[in-house]
Length: 379
Image 1 (cartoon, rainbow, N blue to C red):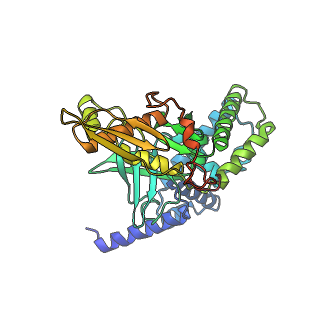
Image 2: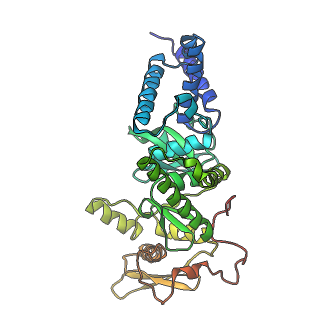
Image 3: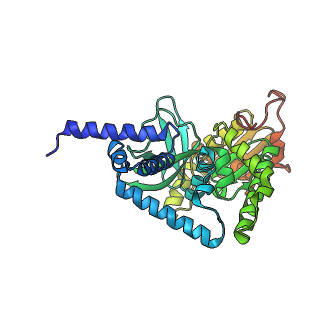
């Protein structure tokens, strides 16, 4: 039987070795790339076995990775996408931002939001709500993850849902290399995953993201159709994307949107508890307005003759009336949910004939220089 103290000491040494490969980059995948590259260098010097022993790595696993890389490179050559030796194709292999972009493109929609609190980090996925990281992840023991998102390879449910092998990415990486982007109900409002993820920014910046993503996808499609296409003729596009990704200050925020479709009983229960749209619609509405630079909404609730309640929410000169509910709390949530649906462009029911762009006009009590977008480098 092994000595528990010895086993724990070995575990700490292994974690220390992995942390060195991570270099505080908040990426299990980049740490693995560095470990592999170090092993390749050691193999050239006939010291691969010693390298694995010192860094608690499996030589068999690294050899399997090496074999898969060669197979993948062979497939790329067969398609005509590369016509050079593998060494000549790695000129940007140390570009951390490029690696994050590739990792994001490969793992999306395996996505987790990151909210750094004073003494803890809250992680949530769209399907599971709050999740945890496996203890052997380089992101598990850090006091703060300086990225608004983690993309992950796998999740496992024990008592809680745990994520394996995660990488931190910025808003720019997610918007440009993640899934489809749609326009929201407000100018400068972009959304992903059917509206579950919301991004708020200057309208011109939102248009730029949409344009760059469209041009990038067209370039990739043309390259696949014509492998001999020289992408260097599109150097301005590539430079713009590289600059945008590298200069993103990673100050994005996550706003929970509508719940995923649930079974009929669960959906009905969620609606009764939180109002239409799931989640706490009052909190979501207040968060959305605060991020757009507006004052908090106010509510006026009346008790109806049938002992039910109907609430009206007011903000920025607009008002929305909810459906009758069994309590004042639910009535306010229903009114907030109605306002959210209109703001996100999913309904036209509104007590006055106006357009959602009116929200961009500030009231006299608000600083006229403030813009409806989070603080950050690109605002």
